[in-house]
Image 1 (tube, helix red, strand yellow):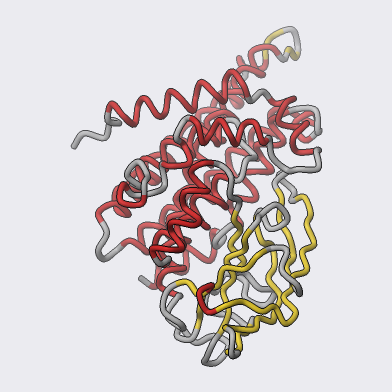
Image 2 (spheres, rainbow, N blue to C red):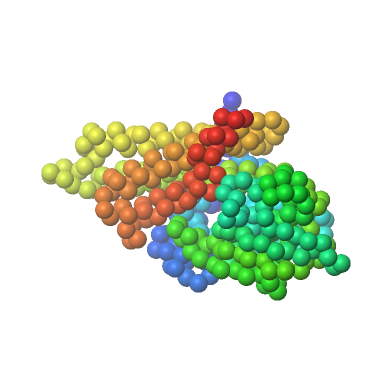
Length: 375
């Protein structure tokens, strides 16, 4: 079986790789992280001009095909630069929900804006008590004469403080953990009753706590059929999980490469530490972890594109493997660098932070290991 990229995918990879190498150095990234906006608006416009924001969408929605393998190509290169721009939150999560569940009018209103770089979205689904259970929803949507009234608290909403529009999961019927009864709503981030508390996460990204206090939305703000949103949410989260796992593969590659280079210049006892056999073995293990991680992400991407049974199992296998590999590579990178490895001034520590956050997103290693065992 041929696992090589197509000509178009190779061109896409080269395009993103060139951007990361030439325009996304570590110091520039840190200025963006410490800024007020949370991402570089010029870079976001460039993403749109180069067509990268079209990658997650199918051709019928105006995109470039929307395959999981194409998404993997982009996210792996983003991982090499630990790119901070909200591609995952706006194009993959928010855009994926609208593409899968939106009406023609909703798609026309939002997808074009995403691809043009003028629309920012955030998916508000997680709740303080829910952990990784997508069906554990206490936020309520009560029917009114004009539409719905939303009340609840959404936690760790990625891009929540930047987004123009929030996509909120809320319960229109059923008990707290029922699979049925969950609906999706498009909510103006500045609507009356929406309280957003934004903060910087450990890896430099932005998230927010979002509280909804009697927020009124119209009936046409409903995405998909009322009470039937959970399967759609699960599908989009699976694709987002693939995206961050591909990002982790890129981050792992850079982490081990920088570690190898460091050992060639760090001298102890009159020789570069790269000559110490114990460190050679540890760096060889880092390389093996990266290669195994890349293989399982490729397997999951192909499975997502094929569809059918076994997708959830493949995604859980991938996420569990990536969690272990990312932790191993990240820890070895900072340990071999020594104390400087965890300073703000060195990029290796920031790759480790991002890999640590990826392990927690959309279900940690233990959660997905249990899912894989049950499936």
